[in-house]
Image 1 (cartoon, rainbow, N blue to C red):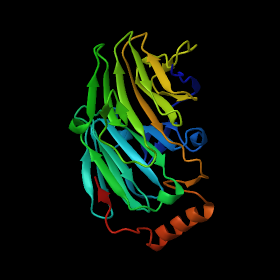
Image 2 (tube, rainbow, N blue to C red):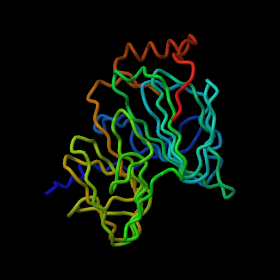
Image 3 (tube, rainbow, N blue to C red):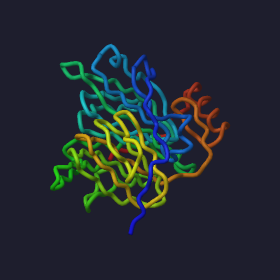
Image 4 (cartoon, rainbow, N blue to C red):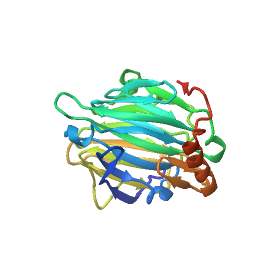
Length: 290
């Protein structure tokens, strides 16, 4: 019999400003990251006000991490200093491994109604991979595996595996699982996970019970951080529930983090910013695409 994980912490998103003045909600960041290893940051940038997002995220560097952008509505136009460009559309995912360094920009575009929305997750890289060749994993909505259950539940498998179906994002260092789950009212979701992974769920819509006999529901805009165990059970007693279930293998290394760069030591961090100022930040001519 598998041991169900229980929720150890509930985090509530908070408003913040990023980029050139984008209004978004930070679910977790620098202060919370130690308990979420290997995950560093999760931003929810859903909005219906173009004035809150059109300024976007102009040119900025990344090193030592992976950024995962998942669009729900509208789109994000992206480009980088090495000539890569594209558009991330609803249901699309971009898994960007910054590795040794990349300079890029991300500019959100809304629907005709003004609605725009998505999420960006930052995933740490272990020391031996921090200076790897940058690469993109661009996945279109059509390429995301979708599992429909008899109850009416729908599970989009972005990374990892569910009911024998593997997601299109593979060969990532932290062995992630990234599921987008929609449950109808009064349904249950049961799923086994690697017992050595850090696991959290983020509620996109509705509210639910995120472990058996929990005393409180987890609401839209909240993240449930799980303790140890081999499986999760999530119930939707009060209506339709949509959430992300994300897990990854902890790294267990020191974190030196400032802005868009995450290394292991302060000296490495200082070196990265010195190289950025000196124009020697980019170490590889062209990121890999996948």
